[in-house]
Image (cartoon, rainbow, N blue to C red; front, side):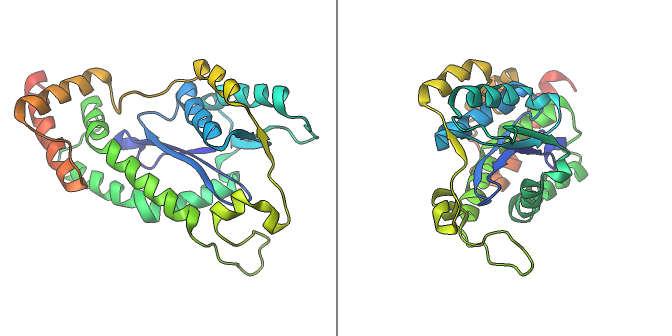
Length: 257
């Protein structure tokens, strides 16, 4: 589990989780923060809900943003792990040592994030982005949904593609989704700890789930402007850029900045 910060200067924070054996992506979420422990825990809990369990061992960075995840992981293991063994249920380490997901971030950059980095850099070079609160909020309002759709597509394509066998490596080859769902084919077993739905529901109060892509006041104001001017949310990056510039010009005039 890790966060990806290449788009963070523009207000887009990405969090992801990958299975260490199969390299199957469990979740990949874009949001307005990657440092709020309750938001990070919310992503983690949604991932647990999708797979009906928690990992026997979770590896993540040492930092306060993962403290709620640590409590959740420890609590679930105390309640439902019938064979705890000697290995801890959570391992902290430097991000560079989290090899599986650190390696996958390079794939994400090639197939997704580099495009958005170039687009936002273009806005910056054209003096349409200054890194202010309003600019970041507008990036979030105009682009968050498009970026999440892009992430979902990348995850889908990755999970069903075939990882080829490499020389001098012990990593398994095959399709991540099959390796994850049917590990017995590869002479191993699932190390997931089953967790009932009621336990996951009980933990929702420990988490925070983002309702808006940006600050709520900016979100409400932008929606009012959309209605007043008969504008629509962009369905592609180019339309989103046009909307971003229009909203930015109007808000700068309203706020006198």
